Image (cartoon, rainbow, N blue to C red; front, top):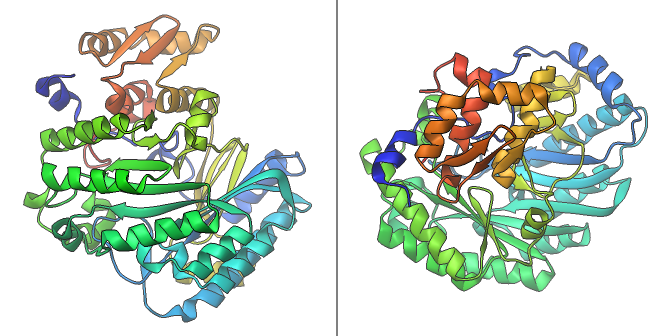
Length: 450
């Protein structure tokens, strides 16, 4: 167990490394469709890729004041048809750019609230995308416990979906009121049971620690209720308080209501102990799963990956993002769609891919991406046969030795291994190796490690 002094020392602003380089360090902050398309064609066209599709469905009926997602708040469901029309048209643009139909191996519906959309709209969307699918497709979606019906569950199951994650956050009425996310335990229980009855084989619950008005007592109550429902996987995220990025949404409460770094760390450690004692295994730095879940299987097989969606079993070599603000990931780099829904519709209506920024990897970027991913997924990275990486690592010997002295890592000239106690500070280790983070102070750019 690390001392309070060590925890405070490393509790600094740091990237979450769901991508490398992080989105703030991309080199195409103005990436027009005209510039993007030729790069896509040269690198991606007719290359027998395995492809994931991420669809961003941004609508929510109410604002959760802890949320950092790109979303649009409305109760007007008339937005459903034109938005699905636009996403389908965007997909057709990619198929045309690809030169032939794209084989889809994975689909993930994220948001926003994907279950804002009626079952028939979701069916229309998925049937347009999965015309050509791989041998063992993996389809998943995010559901709101208050807005996920039996009809939606059955429709998505019939379309091939087997994984679902529900945003729970906290069962404390006090915390729920502070974050404007009122959903009783009984409602989460109902939708979890319904998902199992429908046939979903991997049900995940998303929890957050460090929320306003959270205490050790209500944190443990949330963990105990979660264990009672026994989801196959659990995400235990640290609340990222970044109101300078997300605007008024994260100012729905006083900063005095937020737990301290020491309290957050205690919440995490106690929650982790409870989950491990009840049969869960640790996956990465903020996920847990039953040994039978596919995340645990991916970890054991060395296939665990980390993307903008967090830890995943994603083994495809590219991810095409559809919808407003969606991010795509390719071998050559990244691309992000325009965030404004109105402008997204405008670009689609003009038959223009809605890409507005991105990144094209340098050789250094590609190398460091591989090692950052290994550190975040496997908590170790090896570079015995990579002279460039060995030289890069050696320039940080003094810092590495300090990490080692503080119990965060062990290391030698061939590898870096994050210790059990050091896992929550894997971001700090990655940041040390990151030349972008070393050029610009991270304070005010990213959330804190704890």
